[in-house]
Amino acid sequence: MASKDQPAKKRRIRKVAPTVRQQAAAAAEPKREKRRRIKKVTGKASRPLRAAYHFGRKEVYLPMPDTKVGRFLNKRRSFIPRYFKESWQELRKVTWPNRKETTKLTLAVFTFAIVFGLLVAIVDFGLDRLFRKIFLD
Image 1 (cartoon, rainbow, N blue to C red):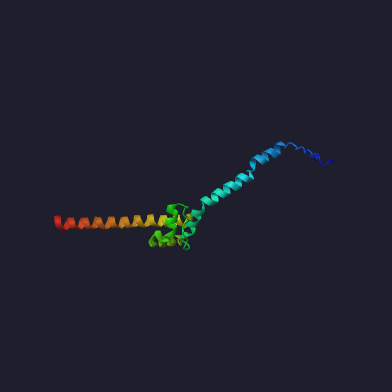
Image 2 (tube, rainbow, N blue to C red):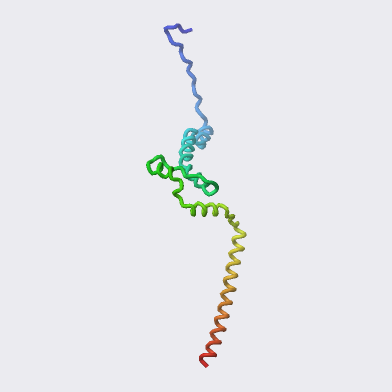
C-alpha cells in the first residue's frame, strides 16, 4: 500500500494491437467527431434552403444572416412581392406527370401538330389553286 507521501502507482494497461480486419473496419467507418462536425455545419447551411422549401406552403420568412443587411431585411419581411409568393404557392400545388404519362402526352402533341400542319397545307394548296384559277385565268 502506498503511504500518504507516495502517490499510488497507476496500474499500466496494455493495449492490444488491432487486427487487420479491425483496422479496415475502423478506416471504413467515418470518425464520429468528424460526422458530428459535418452535420452541424450542413445543418446551419441548409437552414435557408429548408425555409425556402417551406416558403410556398405557409408564411415563413427566410432567415437572413446577422449582418446589417440581414437585420434590415428581417425587419421588412414583405420585401418579396406578393405576386412571387402566390406564384410559388401555385407551383407547389402542381402534380408532375411520370415518365409514361409524359411520353403519351408528347406523342399526342406531335400527332396533333402533324395533323394540323397537314390540314393547313391542304387548305393552303386548295386556296392557292382556286385564286390562281379565278384571278389568273
